[in-house]
Length: 171
Image (tube, rainbow, N blue to C red):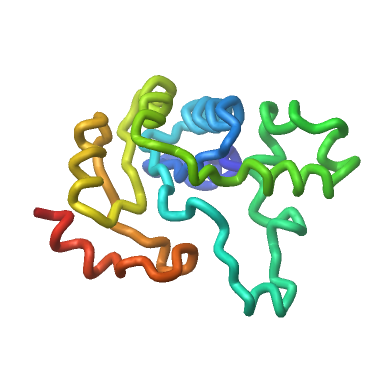
């Protein structure tokens, strides 16, 4: 969970990377927890609108989320837990399915950024910007920065390479 990460970081600067959940209450809870744990900047991951379909991973049964790996922020979250019929430890399969159903939301739009600004006092950086128009819209929406990224090409097949997009975004 993010609190353990913060504790392990000692006095170092803390930036929280948000994978924006479909459930607003879970997202709000994440933001509250991150603030309480001393994270000062919010990096919002936009370049993973859905989990990628990776045949090689499927062929090898490499599905870590289905085994509860990488889900600690969710499983430890009170708003997430409120959506479960039983505690995570009593029905981990239901918890995994609940997680998979809310992990990412490809339907987010520019007006949704207001929710983040209302619930986060520090800097907000959007990760996953690949077009100059989007960088301008981020600035117009009051965002403090952007990261030009396509998630290493791991989640969005056919996307422009971040290195190719960078010069135009910088302009």
